[in-house]
Amino acid sequence: MVTVVARTGVKKDKGYLYFVDKNGNVARAKMSRAGRKKGKTRVEVVNRANVKKERGYLYFIDKSGNVAKAQMARGRKAGKRKAAKKKTVKRKAAKRKTVKRKPAKRKTAKKRKR
Image (cartoon, rainbow, N blue to C red; front, side, top):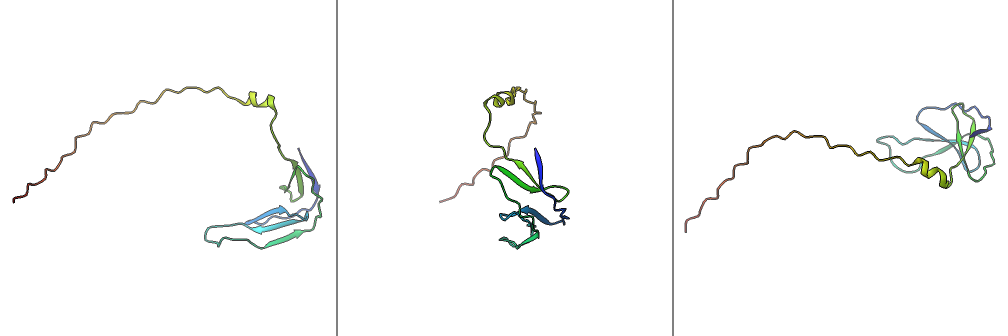
């Protein structure tokens, strides 16, 4: 379940990664592309949302540009694992066409005279 934490309405530009930084602000960094040097990029704060982060939640920027949070999946429940198992179906191997090839000609080594 996703809940909107702060209404910021940030307009997203192409080529940038938008995220909520450790201070709770909306920030962006230029995405890596081919030919660009590797290393840290400059992080630019777009909007000061000052969101207080709770443990166990994932904070992100939704499609409308607001800060939202979703509960992170931690661990598994025993009952759900059995239901997720699927039966394995054995498939017959596809027949391959056999192509007859001519044997390679071997070159005979010349005898040396002594």
